[in-house]
Length: 251
Image (cartoon, rainbow, N blue to C red):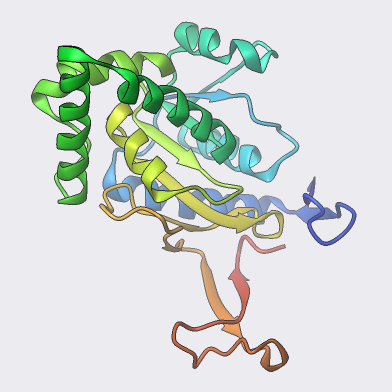
């Protein structure tokens, strides 16, 4: 039994009792969604663990790595040295939260905007080309621009990251698209709660449209419950209501 505490959105944090069945259900379903558009984790993969283990997001990531036999490297303990840790570990799987992704985006985007002359033209052309290809459904890679520019950006995360994950809060679709082309890797965005053992929905890695959290993963069903007094009705356009989860990962 795992007791994981909520963030306390509606009051004091509450202890959520999650069973082995709950965690395995979410882990299996999340792994199935990941493997739809990329190779599932295996013994050659490595996760860098630096998010709080008390948070269900990190518990979910550690569970996935354990089930699939991947390695887990724990950071040095100082988040300010995370970049240095990644140069040593060279992880292939990188989970993060929007706050850090937005910082990475701001740092790289500012360099692109401020670049001048030939370097500025090359950076802007490379970014525009890859963004157009991404939105057209051609993926994250480009034979020329990756070799000249984006492999250097990918080195910020150790150079080997092939799967990125975000959750716990909303993040702009434009930020996700920019990071996808910079690091030449899919970013899976999920939605869930402590009570659902982390993820309840998850995007597909090859979805060219960002800015949503995907559909239900394999082990849950989701419905909207009408709340007439708040004018939340499933019959509305678009449908509105209280989100209810059912499945093996629900406490």
